Image 1 (cartoon, rainbow, N blue to C red):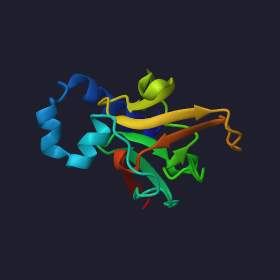
Image 2: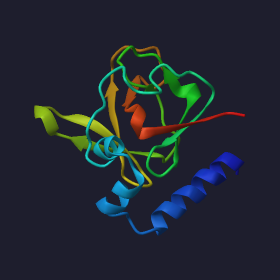
Image 3: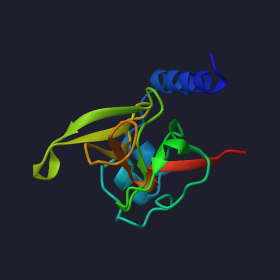
Length: 147
């Protein structure tokens, strides 16, 4: 088992064994904007996020619980105004059906803490191995640069 895989496994076990936080507990550790996006499923304005144009090497972690979610090697420029990834780390992201705003989309949340990340879109014609675009709010992420 690789060190990275072991780390992700331990983070997931820790998250599953801990009691879920209440809204008041999340408000105590998140900014109002982070709380709105991560816990209330708001969306940040396109082109305003810190990681939209970041292409350094590293790992993107959950902005709420710090669970590793994406490797920078899966990030690409989709021109959509939000960070775009073609694949999450195994087991890091859970997909749910989102029927808000009069349409049906695939929402993605952190599997460890349930925080809202964004949405997945398929079949848009990007030259990626998965034919998917994980459109993620920058504020839902924390970037850890490789050393």
